[in-house]
Length: 114
Image 1 (tube, rainbow, N blue to C red):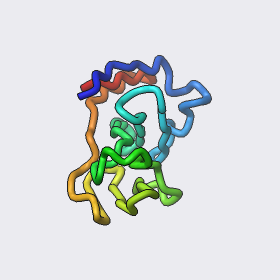
Image 2 (cartoon, rainbow, N blue to C red):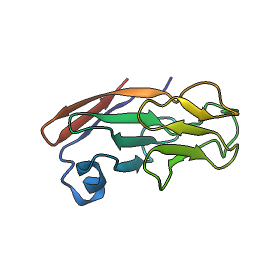
Image 3 (tube, one colour):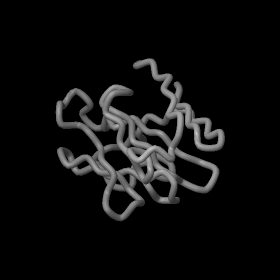
Image 4 (cartoon, rainbow, N blue to C red):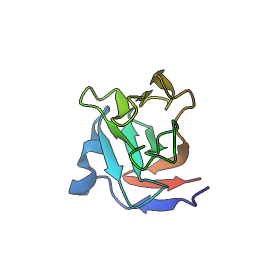
């Protein structure tokens, strides 16, 4: 388990501006086990998932990234696909959902914890 307690002071900051729109996503490499993928699910909800793929996690290339369709994230190494709305698997070989972190959106401030 990797401890996560990270705050984004303002999602209006240019590096997080994709989070201003529903369906937008941002990857933050420096937190989580292999980075965190943030996804704006609705006006009030931003999901945070660890980018560490749940299929063969010891593989160094087991990292998910958001897909251009703004609905899923994929691991190009094994081919697993996950829904950004829930973290659930939408295409095997993975069977376990992505690790989801707690998020608190307060105005434009976002806190990510586990």
